[in-house]
Length: 504
Image (cartoon, rainbow, N blue to C red; front, side, top):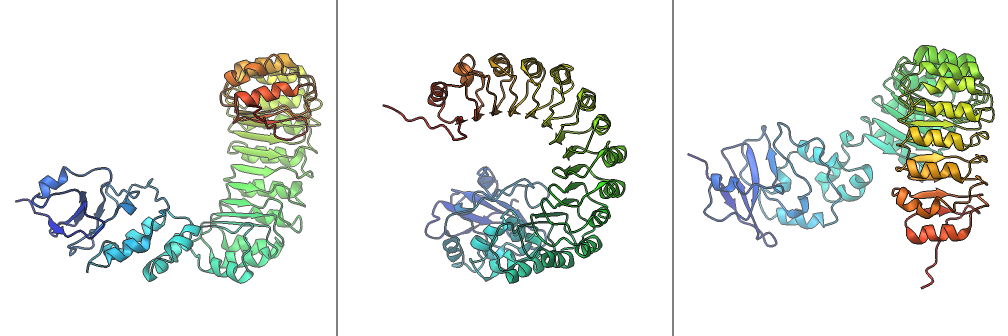
């Protein structure tokens, strides 16, 4: 015979809820608007998307449960585990104290009977700020749970005005930490020592524009943070060239960002390439001491695994650029200074068919024919982001080739490409219908008259149009653009956002 549910009286404020528990089962369910006489089979037909089901195989003697609409965002459904892994718990602006106070009117309240393990799982969807400001103040139990190390997995201490004592205290209470971000810290050296000592499980470490990354500190990091997979030291002071070979001893590194760092030379890059066997992402942009020798060695060893590569390029020649053809899995390629690249070096990029993001800046020796050939082959059809700023020979023929073969482009930057006229821009607007950001800074030969009149219909997703230093474009054209689409951000000749004033 089916077990009958035991009805629990509902408190004031919850008259629409009838709460039932099934003492003979380990399944506890909540159903809305159930009448006094309904049985288990009758109750089941009321199960809906807003119902909550909790499974607890460890606790067999529970005879009540209560709920409230304040927790309706949390839907725990039957799936062989406590919850669906992709559920999100959103911040609740209602008073938790009121819920807790109501629950306390019963000997066995909803809050009290939920096991700590389940509460910790719920709280795992809150970020650190929410845990501290929303969860911890509710009651003593929640304060203890909010400070459980298993919840403190990601910390971002960037730009926060924490005292040194508080920052060390936070790190010491986070032994399970997996991800840490520091930025602009003057006591970075001591903090990193504390991190290495207390957070041996760390997998992601970001240290932006900090001081004190000495050889001794890196040795401590290598000895203790051996699980690191991501390391970003953008702009951080690394004190000597001897530090970089030590970074190569972080064997699990997949993502390494050294951009804007000092003292990285060929030997250091080669050491990193030889030791970091799992390297997929490398950013050494704005480091001008790197030349062909180390880049070619990097490509020889890690070219097949690299998916993201960002180079400065100032000291490189066609030998290094042409070697890029071996990096067939590259999705992002950025070269900030292509001043020594010719059409021969450009051939190293032409066959990279997996590219979705490409930056080739300052390619003053690249010809219009070479750039047209780069796109006309069709192998770069997956590109969505393209930056060809200051490629001074780039003209309408290049834009036409690009617009016919790279139809999925969403972001295009053509700073100071003086040879492009209205003809090329018109082809671009008519063919590349997915563009969201179009940066035409310094293109002095475009007037905008033919193509900008219909740009809003051709480019429905356009959000930013940069016309800075485009001295041939009349403000009346810009004014009409903004009037037709107020959400469009247009940058005028002076670099200011154009604001249209309604004359009516």
